[in-house]
Length: 75
Image 1: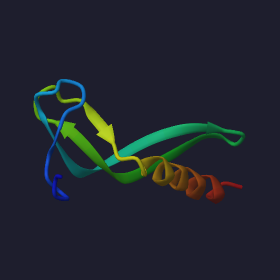
Image 2: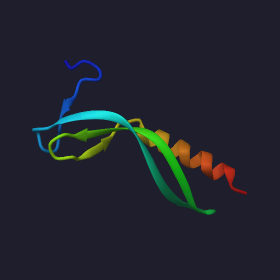
Image 3: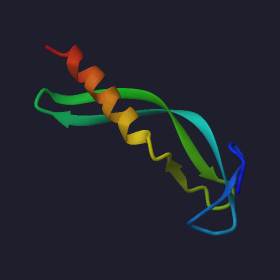
């Protein structure tokens, strides 16, 4: 069993180690009010061999909350 914070093996290339760090992410999403611009800081895993990036399982909730926050600001 791996300790928390310890790098894991990449599921794509099976060679590299995935390390996680906070990254700022900007995105836009269409709504009935037009495009909504959002920016969040989210935990992203990156493989040191193949450079594939992945999001943690709880990331969808963070992205949804960012969208809702920006959506609610609009008239």
